[in-house]
Amino acid sequence: MLPVLDISAYLRDPHSSEAQRFVDQLLETCHGPGFFYLSGHGVDQQLNDNALCVANQFFNLPDHEREAIAIGNSAGFRGYTLLKNERTNGRIDWRDQIDIGPEEPAPTLSPNDPPWLRLRGPNQWPASLPSMSSTIGDWMQQLEPIGLALMRALALGLGQSENYFDNKMSPEPYTRVKIIRYPAQPEHGGSGQGLGLHNDTGIITMILQDSIPGLQVMSEGELIDVESRPGTFVVNLGEMMQAATSGYLRATKHQVVSPPPGQQRISIAYFVNPRLDARFEPLDLPPTLAAKAIGGQNADPNNPVFATFGANTLKTRMRSHPDVNATFYADVQLEDLG
Image (cartoon, rainbow, N blue to C red):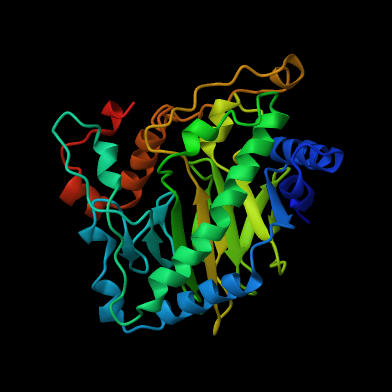
């Protein structure tokens, strides 16, 4: 069972003794299991329900309507990814999804601009589901201050000023949402892999789950099931926070297994992200924390964690979506991003 952390006292008064207890719990949890349920966040349950409802409506659209907004059309990696079009650890992920980011015009760039600026731009929305953009936009607006509160609480726990991360998170944070469907696999011959074992690459992820289980988290060498808990978000950290704290904070590996025949699982992941140009250099930790920091860099030399958020994000996206890579990033070499 994952721990349940109630953020309500911190949101009411971040300088109260109750808020300090939340900060202590948050730091202990993110150093330990790295995953938790977040309660007391104040997000209207109706907005969560609306988001899940419109997600189901989207996946019920005819194939050709979803495929019309394929992610391969977008330099910003926005749009629909077909079933079986991604791999993790060399195996097919049995899921389809739509990626959504900050809504803005495509930038006008010069050849000398960093390639990760191409991540900015418009979303792709299904023409026959006009309510989707406002429904998801309203939901994203509700989660943004919760994400910032988590960053401020972590800063305090790490011995920094409460506003240490603020200048990295604004203006124009590169917030991203991924709406995912995990359909059942064929009864015979399926791998069971909805999403392969991995850790997230960014800062903080907040997950809204429906009632169908499937998420599994690595805990003390074993995978444990993360059941749906109404009224909460499942929260975990990404590799950039692990690297920025020299491994004191933990980007825990996790996976999703496919649901049983006749069912499908919907989850909506909200990525608490900074500006694309924000850099996350290793923090100067208090001695008591530094003594427990085991090193935050990936062991794989072919998968370095770049300090600039945009570079680290583009690295991951290019590897996940070779179709977008071939169309919009053929001039970019991963080794040049750092």
